[in-house]
Length: 276
Image (tube, rainbow, N blue to C red; front, side, top):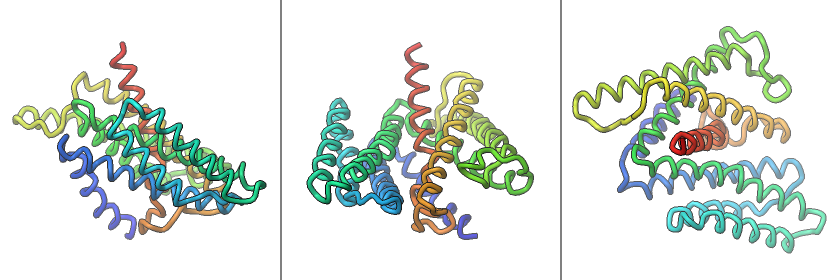
C-alpha cells in the first residue's frame, strides 16, 4: 500500500513537470539535478559500508554543479565534468589518511559517472523538438515494465534470472517486463495519434509505430540491466535498499536505477537514428 500511495503522489507530479514545456526546462533540469544529488548521497552511503570515506557533501555539490554547467554551457559539459572530477581527486588526496585515497577517490568519481553522466541524458532528451513526449515515453515504458515484472514475477516467477545479483528476479518477470513496456509504448502511440486527430500537440511521436516499439525494447533491456547493476551494488554493500526516503520504494537510487541506463540508451538510439 505504501508503494502504491507513493507512486500515486509522485507519478502525476513528475509527468506534469515533464510536460510543462520549454519555458520550464530549467525547473526540469533542477529536479533531475536534485534527484541525482540525493541518489549520489545514497550511493556514497553504500560505499561507506565497504570502507570508503568519500566527501559526500562535496560530491553532491559537484553533481549539482555538473547539471548547472550543462544547462548554462552545454558545449563545455565534458570539460566541466573533467574539472569536477579532478577537483574531487585533489580533495580526496589531501583530506584524510593516505590509505583511504584510492577508495575515497574511486567512490567519488564513479558516483559522478554513475549518477551524473547518465542522468544528463534526461535534459538532453527534454530539449529535443518533441522532448517532453520523449521523456514521457521513457518514463512510462520503464514504469510499466517495472510494475508488470513485479506482479508477474510474484505470481509466476520460477526460473531465476540472475540469482547472484538479485535472487528475487525471474525470467518470467523479465519477459513480463518486456511485454509491459511494449503495451505501454503501443498505448502511448495510439493516444498521441488520438490527440493529434483532435488538434492537440500534447504528445508527439513521429515515425512509424514499429520504430517506437523497437525503442521500447531497447529501453526495457537497458532498464533491466540498470536494475540488476544497482542490485549488485546493494548486495556488495550488504543492504536491501539504498535508503528510505520513498516509502515502499526504498531510496531515490532504488527508484531511478533503471533510468541510469535506460535514459542514455534512448538518447544514443536517437542519435544513431538521426545520423542514418
